[in-house]
Every structure is written in C-alpha cells, then in structure tokens.
Image (cartoon, rainbow, N blue to C red; front, side, top):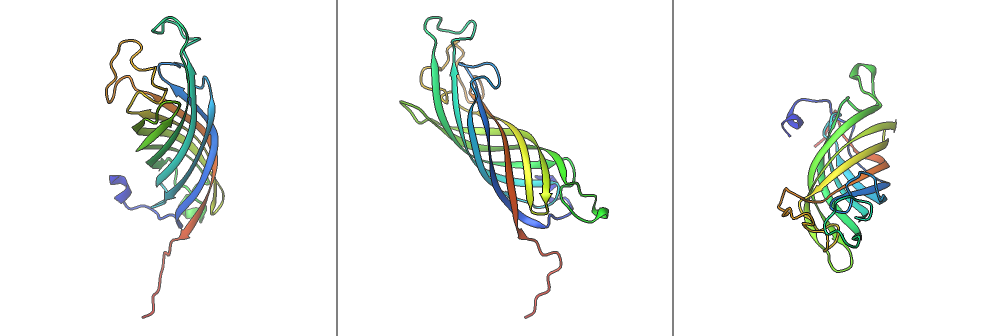
Length: 213
C-alpha cells in the first residue's frame, strides 16, 4: 500500500470492469492433486486504476468444486470412498502489481501493451451443498498476464489460489480425517481458478482541467 502513494504516472482512465470464465479445482482431504476433478468457474469485477503499475480490484466469483477419496492412498477412514460436490460464491478485494508500466501512449512514457502481474488480497466465501452453507474468510493469491487490445479494451489470463480459513467447503464429512485438528490456519481447504477474461476501461481522468466559475 505504501507503493501506491509513491509518485507514478497516472492511468488515463480511473476504472475498468469485466469478467471471465474458466476452470476451478479443489485441494483438501478429498483431493491432493492440482487440477484433478475440474469444475466451472466464472467471475466479474471492477478495478480502480490509480496508476499504470497498480490496481485495486473487487471481484465476485463462482466456483464448482468436487473431490473423491477413491483414488487416494492412505486416506482415513479406509472403508468406502467419500465424495462431495459443492458450489462456492466468493467476494474479495485484491491489490495487483504490474511488472511493467501498462498502457498505450507516447514512446517517451515507456508504456507496454502487455505485462505479467501478481495479486493478493482478502475476502470471504460461502459454500453450498446438501446439508449446509458454511462461510469462511479467504486469502486469494494469483498471477496473470494482461494484454491491451485497444486503449480501453484489455484481455487477461489468470491463475489464482485461494486459501479458505475453514475446513467445510468440501462438505460435512471431510473434517479432520487424518486426526489433525483444524484451526484458523492449519488443515484448511484451498481452491484454484484458471480463467480468461476481458475488461473495459471507463471514467476518463482529466490531466489538465480548467474550471470556469
């Protein structure tokens, strides 16, 4: 956040909005392999663009999660496999850092039409399945790639991992299977999203405004 206050070149527009679709995946007691049992993911969001290096993003997302202990070795209990399916609605705010000054402009500004970026933030989610609607705080973390098609139109590809500070996104029967007691930080659920999307910028920033009384 301190870097946001540092002098930096302003972005020509204050905001963007858009969304994307992709694939979701779950990591927890019923799945220990990334991208196993993939599901559908969708997201919509708005960014505030203070400058060409940083963005503050608010996101509303949907992820379908599923898993099974059928193909896992050494799970507890060792009788019948346990399976689950759930839908997760998430709401979060993240800070994004662009590796390059992102934009289209005069050569002397050294702007680039593409940039990789990193993001981290805080949020909350609610899972829905037969028998419950648990809620948990979350910490989304991601990296991605942006490309500016036109001055106001952007494409992005992003992979994110979200840590849920809870162990009930995968249903009521998958808690502490190995005898490791869940706490706020330990033995909790994770889910990921791999998505592609598009955004449109609005709210033109006035660099030299002249007001007449």
